[in-house]
Length: 292
Image (cartoon, rainbow, N blue to C red; front, side, top):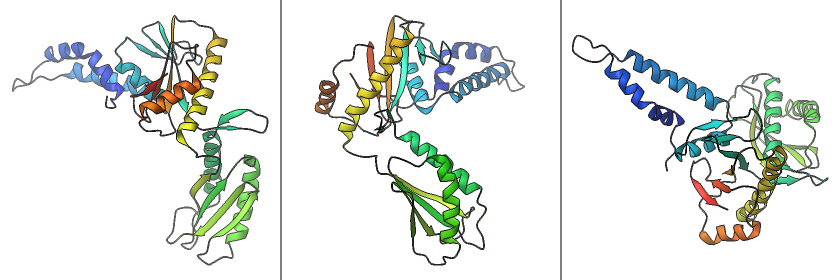
């Protein structure tokens, strides 16, 4: 199915009421309806739906659209508050949602998503550059980062990076790239920008050397980790509803899978017993990639 706005689901569910209000509306001098109440209801529905979606993360929104498209009944987000399940369909199907992202094992063996570090770095660098002032005399610099784990503490980055940037760039008038390290695993590359940017320093590219690899191999590992984590969550919270699903949204950008690749993943992971259905959705689409 094509991606459909959740607003349309809500409008369709209320269409008979909207239509009744439209035909009950007064008419103007030319006999055309003046659908004031119908318009007000449409605006109210749109406002309520957008407010509902505003509290969801991208993966949750994608999952919500998919669940609504099934037509199995009312879909409620966080029916029991900020705890499991994430969604409830028709009062009986509990749905947990998670994203399929690359994982990284710390030195102590703890597994966590790679994108968490990238987001923390991006926010820290943006904050640093915003506080270092605007471009001066048409001069600005593009700063790129190449890193792997372990990553320096964000406090250390905030303390060291501004000082080193000023030291390395204030006397440099060439167009050659400058390179220095904050640690053995965190390299900073700085290059003079042709033409002025708003701020003196601007974030260019970031390269995570721990990311990448064979997509199917990554998918097997991350699927197994995601399913185990969500199964543990389900067991700890107790089975409050008779039917339990797990919906996993692809963030590895896998694309379509061949049948033999799906079978390979199924054999590697097996059939987990914690959930009645395990559904993997395509990247940024409310469509099934495959089921386990």
